Amino acid sequence: MMIKIYALVIAAFINVQIFAQTNDYSVREVKNGLYIPWEMVNAPDGSIWFTQRHGSISRLNPVTGQVKQLIFEQNVSINNGEGGMFGLALHPDFPNTPEVFCSYNYVINGNDYREKLVVYEYNPTTDELTYKRLIVDMIEGAVIHNGSRLLISNNKLYMTTGDASNVSFPQNTSSLNGKILRYNLDGSIPADNPIPGSPIWSFGHRNPQGLTMMGNKLVSSEHGPSNDDEINIIEAGRNYGWPNVEGYCNLPAEATFCSANNVYEPAKSWTPTIAVCGIEFYTHPLFLQWQNKLLLASLKTQALYVLTFNANQNTIISQVDIPEVSFGRIRDVLAAPNGKIYVSTSNSNNVNNKIDKIYEIYDPTPTGLGTGDTDHLKNSWTASPVPANNTITLQNKSKNDTAEVDLVDMSGKLIRQLHVQGKQMQIDISDLEEGFYYLKIKERGSVQQVLKIQKQ
Image (cartoon, rainbow, N blue to C red; front, side, top):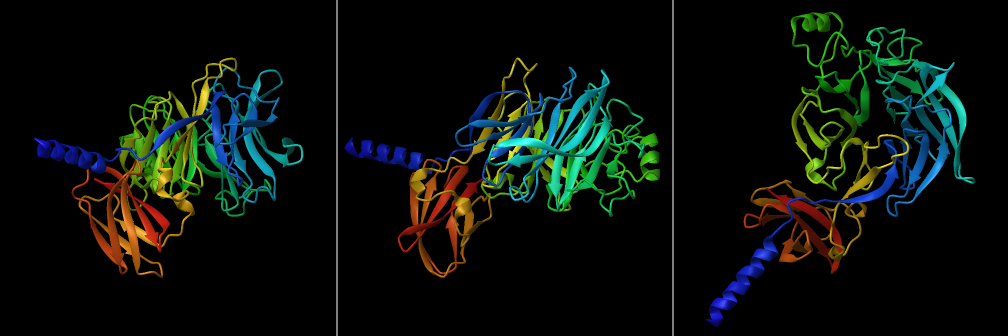
């Protein structure tokens, strides 16, 4: 009888030891009481700067949740619709060049609704922003379809604009509406823009809601009408079809227009629409299952999606949503330099009902692993493939030819210990449950690196 009991205890212990968490991430609320945080950007000091639609630019400490309002722009008007303060970008040499770029809507002459792109200057002594200069003004605005996102890449400033509910604008290159614009950081027009003297980089857009770089490719998300939300690869001088083309060039009239007007078809189109919003191309190894994939915030389906491109990065071949990320309408997504992911919501009905929040998706790596964040560690060891079914190949690029490796689960519990001799080793994981694990690599008695692996 005692033998049977002992065997049961051992079996239960083994089951606990080889269990792995299905998701390798946790979610926490960082800040609440906000009014539609529209765009979030990383600052060099680790803080997150963000706009709110009613007119503020603020700085968030993502560790403590403390928020400091840096400016409240009195000229911003939400116009009882989709307008307000939108895009945000910090100068790439910030804080040495303490310039902050922002786009917003305002009213002139009582009822003329417009959009402008301005530059503020940050004063570290007063910890405030003040107006510095104007880049572009008098872009048409409307109750709907105002855009607008900002992005700086290779010292060029990109701005998306909506069609301001006027379908004559997107195909008209004399209008700045329904476009993606490109400026030098001083506000001048780059000499290599496709139309000499014009900031227009691409045209034929309805209402672009997201903007990111995927390597050297510019990518946007765009609201369709009741059909054909889009993800677009943006190229200089290309036409994206609106209002003559909705989604792909798959109708006879659309095919004719596309052929005659150099239209670039979307990488993906959704019908019915999901109300695509902020996007971020995720490159960090913290979450390997999302690495080199596009993160997409959705308003309508209230989800954060992971989109996988084909090898040529011109077509999206798969789409999954991230479980446990369901906070209502999601407005923006941001990847921090340490790999953590932040999402902002868009649930407030008015400025007196500030119920929006910013959440953090983080790696719950057990502190007992004996290291700090894995992105601060040297990359002497690699494990592949990830995910894997039966075998992981551990490769050693360090000067040492010997090491001890602890295989642990997501809770930090030890599963087995391995001794590595040489530059490469095969690790059998066929007996593990599906999920995520860590390889804790120790050289000369101290932990040198922690690798995350996934059993599929």
